Image 1 (cartoon, helix red, strand yellow):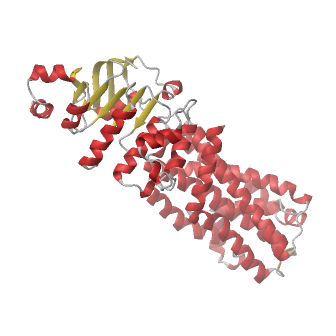
Image 2 (cartoon, each protein chain N blue to C red; image 1 turned 90 degrees about the vertical axis):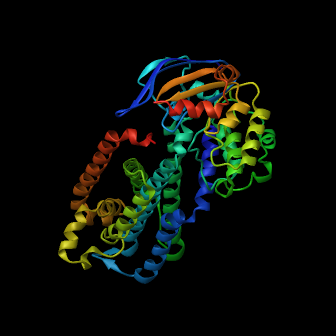
Image 3 (tube, chains in turn green, blue; image 1 turned 60 degrees about the vertical axis):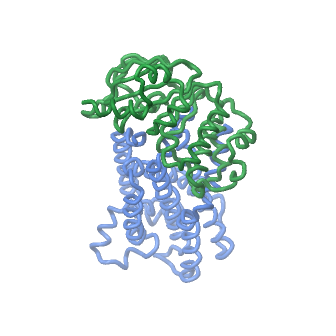
Length: 227
Length: 251
């Protein structure tokens, strides 16, 4: 799914979260979305999820209920019924979509079969994120939107999460926000870098790194230190 | 339809995993009827028997706990946990999702009433005949009314701690001063006057009115003021819901 955004703006009261941004995200790429807290990442992702309105601009996606059939999402504050079992949640969320994948196979693939009977509240951080991923994949999405999915996970769980993502999603556009530059550099093909609601960078990651002659962490620090 | 069935099934499973809801909405009214029924079954209130007065009263407590409190409590908690935000990224409309929660509480309220009828019949030999059809219809309408109030309260609250605390503080006085448990006549005159501001008092009057020929005669003059009061509460709630409708979708 290709995403074209033109002149997108969003303001909360007196704070401008997105300031006329333009983006062209190629289909079937893994996009790393970076930026400091308050740079507009979550606002952009929630607009793309169809749960946040915007003030100005054009997006080539319909953002309606039909569109939601085709996307998978892990929100930053992802929440489900804590007293439901993992398999109950997977079945419930699958029932929301017209077409779904084989749920047993999905649970196997994502590695949640062993704790499918557990209550969601009793899962560890890593287990929760696996379950969240399964819930995002029940409809075999064309676009996967992940808002800081590895935040709070230990290094091993992060590594497992990325491995899982690569294993399960090789046919879709993935947009993933993160504060971990190493994992973005290691796993993403395309970079969108936001600062104060403006696009600093929107290009293939290897082009960015080649042009700047820096690793992503250093580039991130340099840009954010500029006034 | 499949998703409604699935959600409903999970909603009921969750109800049994969080038994506090059941205690308030089903067990407490049933136990109260058993206890007070055993103690006062031979009492008469101006010629009206205990059960004609108190089956409607305990039914109203079922409504208050099952439809008002539980609805508000769940929706506020879900909102606070951002469960609805996650639902909104799916193709399911949020109104449909909440509709299933309301339906569950409708069923719980009906079930709570059926338990009261069974207890009345089995333990106290109260005859429940076709003459109660009108009461049952009014009770069903009252569930819808109670769910509307529950939704209104939920939209107004964003924090479950605040909601629970306020409801817990109000719960007992509202029930005690509703005439549904302790007769209002035993309280000082000032309390009796203040009870007129208590929606449960008016709910109790309306439900009692529709229970039998005797209660209809007894509450004849009080029905209209109580209906108007409850209608006023309903209108007020809908105005508040309309003015605050966006709160349901906010972070």
